[in-house]
Length: 374
Image 1 (cartoon, rainbow, N blue to C red):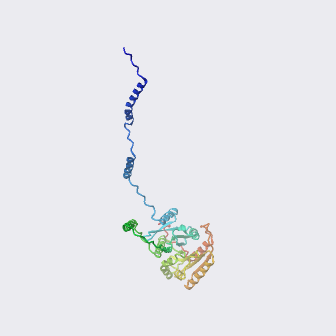
Image 2: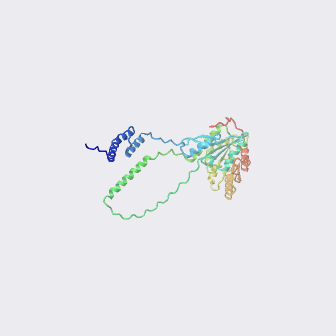
Image 3: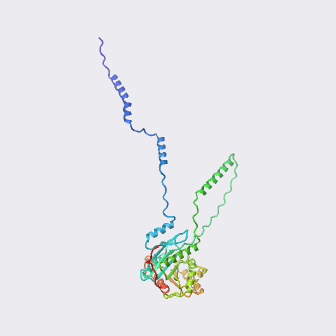
């Protein structure tokens, strides 16, 4: 009888190992069943590109304002909603912003202020002092900006002389490369011409634009029943403004003088104030003759800041006024008003101009439709 063999430990270990190996693949498959296989890097990139192509392209919002100047005017109108008035102008300008303050006391007339600046906030403190203080004394103020002068053209810099070109030995294929460079440059220039935006409608000349602003301001005041006007100008735009007002002033000089005020003019414009603030901005003798064109027009020639050069200009203005036989010409040399208090109605500057306006143009408004906004 043969003895029975007992299995060794090594044989048992091999058996268990084979059993585990045979069961491992089904278990792994059971764990991954129902889960998507991981994407390779190339497949993920392709899916991202396809999703980007299918997504709708975001359209850029158009700008709120057509230009920086239009933005400044709109924001200014939003800041002063009670004072902002829009004047209708011919295209391409369309409209202009003005600031109107009605009289707070018994109405006597209005000061029509013209200044060569882009926007009323850029006005100097003396004019802001008048605009804000006079309504307490019965004088409405209507501030209108005029187009500033065009800046002088920038002189072209002389082109530097090119250095002498060194002698080159032509290499084979150099002519072909040069022809390819010329063709590439012509193609780039053609593409640039196509991408350029069409030119905007050019603005009319500055004198025509100033005439449009002046006529629009007078029309707005007439529609709102505002008469007895005193016009204030600066030397930068005085000749153009007076050229626009000349037919009206000459017709007023031939009419019957009003019953109120000392001005002999019968039209809505009764007097003129010229404010000279800068030594370097002066009217020539020819321009002064254009401003003093109507002998019957009362003129107050104000020089702000007593300096030697301004005093010299004052004497020259007085001589031209005598030569043009201005019967109602006055000149005034004052110090700069207090810039810390633009509403200081007690300043010498405000009192003197108020006195001139009261003597020359004081009256009563007629047919005022409650100062309606437009």
